[in-house]
Amino acid sequence: MEIKEKIERAASILRQACHVTALTGAGISTPSGIPDFRSPGCGIWEFADPFKVASIFSFSQNPQAFYAWVRPLVHTILNAKSNPAHFALAQLEEMGLLKAIITQNIDGLHQRANSRVVHEVHGHLRQATCIRCYATVPAEPLICAFMETGEIPRCAKCNGVMKPDIVLVGEQLPAKVLIAAQKAARKSDVMIVAGSSLQVVPAGDMPILTKARGGKLIFINLGVTCLDDVADVVIHADVVDALPRLVEALR
Image 1 (cartoon, rainbow, N blue to C red):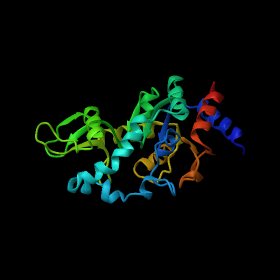
Image 2: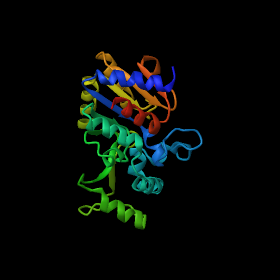
Image 3: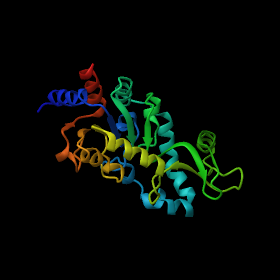
C-alpha cells in the first residue's frame, strides 16, 4: 500500500474515533535539530555512557559529569523550534480529535506548538529540585546562569545540588503523570504513535493499553517497532511530512 493510501486509511480511522491520544518520542523532535538517543552514528548514547553521565546514581556521586554532558544538549533544546509534526498534532487537538499527547521528550516543543494536554512521562526542564532538601524552583533562572557560567546550580536554602525535573536512568517516572498517561491510553479508541521506537518502557507499553481495550493503532515512524505487526496502519515516513498530510486528509 502506498503512503497516500495509508494516510487515507488512517484518516478514515480517525474520522470514526471519539478519543484519540498521541504517543511521541525522540523522532518527532529530531527534525527540530534535537538528537535522539539510539540512531547509529548520531544518537546521544553513541558518544556517552548513560550510566556514567545520566543515571541518578552517577548524578548523586558526580553531578559535574552530568552537567558537563547535558550543557550542549540544553543549548540545543533552548534554541529548537517546533516543527510541522508538532503543529500538526496541535491542529488535531484544535479540531477536537486529539484529547492528549503522551510524550517521552523533555524539550517542551509540543507546548511551544500550542498543544494543551501533554503528559511528559520523562519530565521537563521547567522546574528543578534540590536533591538534599527537595526545594523546588523554576528552572529557567538556574539554566540561564548555568549556560553562562557552566557552574553546577545550587539550592539557595541549603546549597544542595539542584537537579532539573527530568527522569534520569534508574529513576521512577513521575507517578501522577504516568497514571494520567495510562488513563488516557486506556480511554483511547485510537492511538497515534509518532517518532517513537517503543523501546523504552513503560511509555513504550502505552499502545498495548489502547489495543487491549479494542482501540486502533496508527504508527508513523521512519523505522520499524516491535509492535508494528499489531498496528492497524503503519506509515514508514518522516513525521514532518506524514502528520501534516494526515491533518489535510481530515479537513
